[in-house]
Structures are given as C-alpha cells and as structure tokens.
Length: 616
Image 1 (cartoon, one colour):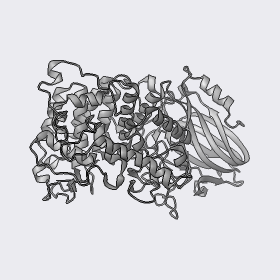
Image 2 (cartoon, helix red, strand yellow):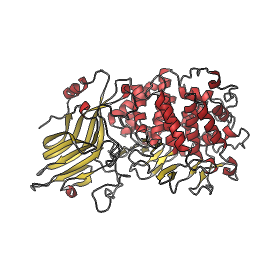
Image 3 (cartoon, rainbow, N blue to C red):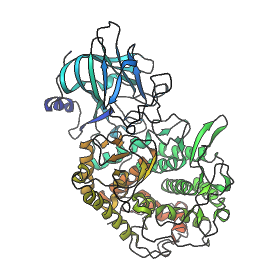
Image 4 (cartoon, rainbow, N blue to C red):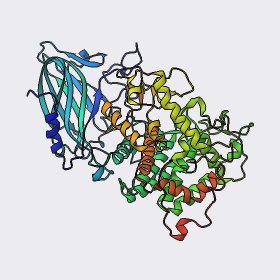
C-alpha cells in the first residue's frame, strides 16, 4: 500500500476522531536514529550479539530496542539514520524492534494505545495514540507491525517507498484495537535499499487546558520510572526494575502524586495517593540507614533492597525524602505517618555527621561507617534543606553561615530553587536570619543570568531564538556521565531544561507557557515529557532520556506554576505552612514566619487555609 506524506488534511481527519476540539496531535518519537555516542566512538553492542547496551542506548520512550531478521548484521548505523541494503537474496530481510513499555523482556509491561500514560492517571488526562509516522527514503518495501507481549501481531501494514528524498509517511491506527501493545517494528523486505531516520507515534493529547497538560505530561514522565511492585522509583526509565533506584526520586514521586491528587487537577485518586505514600514509606523504612541516613541509590538483592555499591548514604537525599513525605502526609492529614517520619528524623545522628569546620557531611560511604570528608557549606537550596532537616529534631543545633551568601556554586540553576519546591517562605525579600540573604532577589538574579547567558553567548543559535535557558545539572548530551553547568562558567553550551519549570513560579506564567509551546513544536517537550538535555551547538544533539530526579523537579515546578497561573490553592505550600515539623525547620531562616502552630490542624479538624501559589 502506498501512503501519502503527512498533510494538513490528514491532520484534520485524525483530529476529528477526538471528541473534544482542544485535543492536539503531537509527534512522539519512538526513536530518531541520530547517534548519541561521543564522536569517534561506535554504537555500543553487547559482545557477540547485535543487542545494544540498554544503559546508554534506548528509545525516546525510555525502553530498549534492537535489530532483527536474517540480515540484521548487515544493517549499518554510521550516520544519523539506519541503512538496510538487502540486494536480491530472497530471504534477506532485516529491521528494528522497539519496546513500547518497559524492557522487551519484561512481560508485565505493555502500552494501551487508547490510554497511553500510566494507568493510574485518570481518564480525563489520558493521551491516546492514533497513528504512526515513518521518516524514510530509498527504494523498496517496509513492513510496519505492532505486537503484543505474547508476540501476537495486533496490527501490520506494508508500505512501498520510492524516493531519493526523505518522506514522512503516516499510517492511521485504531487506538481501541491496541490495548496491549508491546513492540513496534519496521522491517525492510528482500531487495530493498532503505534509509530510516525516525519512527514516531501520533499522540492525541488530553482535551484539557495547556497549563494542566504541562503538569500531566511531566507527571506521566516521572510515573514511568515508578515500580508499583517495589514502590521504588528508578533513576532512569529505561533501566530494569531493581537495578538502580533513587531514594530522593522516590520521595519526590510520593509528593508529586499527592499534589496531583488534589484540586484543581485530581489527576490520580486520593486513595491511590494515600496508598502510594504509605507503600513508599514502608519500602524505604526497610532500608539500612546507618546514623539514620538513607542511601542515595539502591538495588534489589536476594535479601531486599541494599545500597548500590560505590554510592553513599546521603544527607541531602535523606533531606529531600523526609521533606517530601512530611508534606505528603500533611496534605492527606495522615497523623500516624507524620509521627513515624518525625521519629525517623529524630534518629539521625547529626552530631557524628558534623565535620570539624562545623559543616554537616555529605554523608557516609557505602560501608555505612566512613564519613565523607566534604560538607554542606555552599549557599543554596541543597545546603538549606540539610540544615533545616537537622533543625526539625534539634532547634538548638549549631548554626554555620553558608559560603558566598546569595551566590549559587558555579551559578548552577537548580541550586537556587530546591528549597522553594517545599517552602513558600523563600518567596520573600525579607533578609533571612542566618545569612541576611534576600532569597527572592537572589533567585530572580539567577533567572535573569540564565536567560541572558544564552542570548549573549550564543546569539544566533536556535536556543537563543526560542528563548531557551537552563544551565543546571543532569546527564550530559551523550547520556554517559553527569554534567554540572552554570552561568559563572565560560562557553557553556548544554541546557538542562528542568530549570525552566523549577524557576517558572518566578516568571510571568503566560510567557513560560508560550516557551513550553515552542519547545513542544521543536520536539523538546513531548507527550513523554521534556528531554533531559539540549546541546546549543549540535543539530540533533539532545538527550531524550527520562531521568526521574529532573522529571520530579519538572512536575513540582509545573504544579507550582499552575497554582500561580490560576491563583488556586497550592496544597504543597499550604501544607508547609501547617506542618509543625516544617515550621520548626524554617525558623532557622525565618523565625517569625516559622512559628510552630500550637495545635496541629489534624487535631482540630480544620481545613488548610487557601495558599495561592508562587512568587509574584
């Protein structure tokens, strides 16, 4: 069958299938076949096979992929396309398979094309998949097919290709007929000479306002990292369950789930939020916690989850986890869980974690005994969260001023926004009691510097023309190492766009939503969430990795932005104002606004007062 390239007319036909007019069709790459390896390095295969290393090679969906067919070893991938030159051998066929949900070998994971986001997200916010797009050139025939977990063919279609130029070929699908899709494959048939640049899903977004969609897409990205069986959150969506879980991301997912269960969204049920909050705490409290500290990363062993070798028991990850769970418990009025969390915080031995210069250590080595020699002294949200966690259990703890008050280390973006994910108090220009910093001004200076850096350093770039910014921290553009950037460093060319949403409550909301729409059009903000990193200097140099920590930052930033845009109840900040534990913590910086309520809201049965969101 010969199909016409995608057109405005076809777009209208596809969109008419949606019951509501404000649904949009967005192209979500399954994979764009550009090479993410560093220059000069070949695509990594597992020795003796055509299977790829899934730690560094994965689809844009956060799944694995590979090659198939008798001629699979003749497939070439030396440029930003897959080339299949099959000649005239009658049995020489070859192509690519791509898992649609989880790893291909994980039989419990499948994708419902009629409700494509994780199934605990309500029907109102579900997206659906109504077509496939293949970007291809050459001569021959290519077969597209969708298979179930059991390898049954659920749908297939063969396409004739006859063009020396790239074509965008679109094939409509019936979403309701594909409730359990596991693999989407393309196969070049014998005699074909084809070059495939991309395979994409046509996703119809939920028919909701764009500000709600931003929260939904960000939360769906984070939710794909959640393992419901263990109640832990993977560091990266494309990793195997149990291989590399993040305790900080697990805590942030709990808070995000509680937040989106609240009005005005109610994206998940409150029952699911309550169950998730409790199950996460149940899982985390079984972890070994020397001196009361939680591990940074864990992995599954025969005896349960244990610290991942070579990582640490971390003070900042412990602070992020307990702040997240305390807020979640406060929103849901769970006194019993709050008491359990407060007891765990009281068991942290901060005295032994204090270094000779007065700083709190970054934590312990994986042996659970050796104190890390580096401490929290740099100014910013990470240090503040660690210090405030100590203040929950000991209001008389030694106070140490931060280094370079008001200036984040290297000018790294997320550092100025971490604390404001949890506390509304830093939306103020009242000098704090510790260092005299006017936090709102410091945060705005960072935002201005972030925006100016790209405009001035790369004035002719697409990033500058789009208004992109975000010199922050995350995976490098090749996905094989952690990268920390900042506005104090020269010639920075890697953007981590999570900062756009982390800092969004500082902005004019309509301007930020307009930027997000431009990013959507450019393929940097897809139905599977924001890309991890964008290289200013490279054409296809972006990293489509779903990392859970930055996904959590994006979700909570999107939530705070929505609250500001709507002037609606910000349940996170309202809970922060009502939590006796967090009021005690923030007294370190704001003694007056940190007054601890004499009687808890739970005890009185009062509802939280409306806390309208964000900085103005």
